[in-house]
Image 1 (cartoon, rainbow, N blue to C red):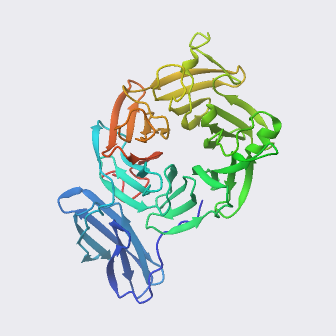
Image 2: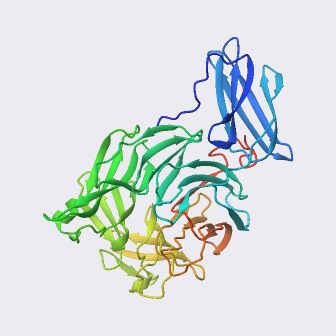
Image 3: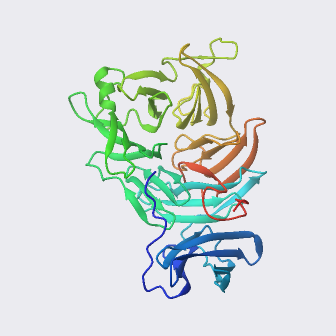
Length: 459
């Protein structure tokens, strides 16, 4: 696992008993400091005064007589009745949180029909290049903000995911290095900055062994001027060293990726992942291709997409309509022998539309078949977007909107949850400004972060 900053080291001058502090950059939390004459521990319990279901409880360890812990995920402008307990003795620690800062966006719920309970983690910004005002947000499934952090980079297509209960990992957007950030707002680890012409791009995730997978924009050439290719990297858990890399220059040299015009981005790798059999796959959006590589050798195993190594067939095994393929998609997820795509649909040989696509594939037979797809009237977003399979079988997708990039202007960025069993939408969170931009989101169950019994009854 990546190292986590669980709490700041308290000052040895902490007075006996409890001290409550505001967090410097987030009004939705408080730090509780505990001073004891000997090693020990305490407990803090807080309830919103007008909502007893809003109940939070944390432990504070003081192994050397002093200790601290942050209570995060509170509501803004809300009175909390709090008690700190040491050896059965309680102290009143009540407080009221401040209002939210005015630079945060606005959103609302349009549908809320027994959704997958917990939180939505996502990046937010503007579609105005040079003025992205990027930020990371955690919103509960009742539509209330629980955490935020202002990103110090002008980045739109950031990737972000939760790392345990105390941190997030983010990066990309052509500017932000893979960065481990504690939910208390402290940068715990960050990958090195890159040389000119190289940029962290679109994807960063922690793998099961604690290493970190990411994409980098990399110069490629056929002996002349350069264009923008890509490099897949696996970083060590501290983010300081590269353990494995694969550069698209190899594919150009081997002849299965074509040369390109100088200064262009002909492949636009926007997602990467690993398979259980030692493969590394890369989504090449501009070519509507998903390429599977062999991690041990770096060889190409196969390419999935229109006109490539697989035939698209229907349920009877006959040739399917080519329009049923994915076209310039984002954020595929590999689940055994099927792939879940956010299919943007740009370049589809039919009426433009975006959708969620579940595609089964058979490597031995070299066939692919549509298992399920979902769209809505008027949904067409040529760039950005994300899709995730939830543990209960529902699908959450990020209908990320770029008002300046779409023929359908005045749309809104949305996070939508749908049940494939009946295509019923069970959750829809809608940002209110057409220039509110996103890229990806991640759904977190109620026990994944924070100490709130409303979303994690076992706490």
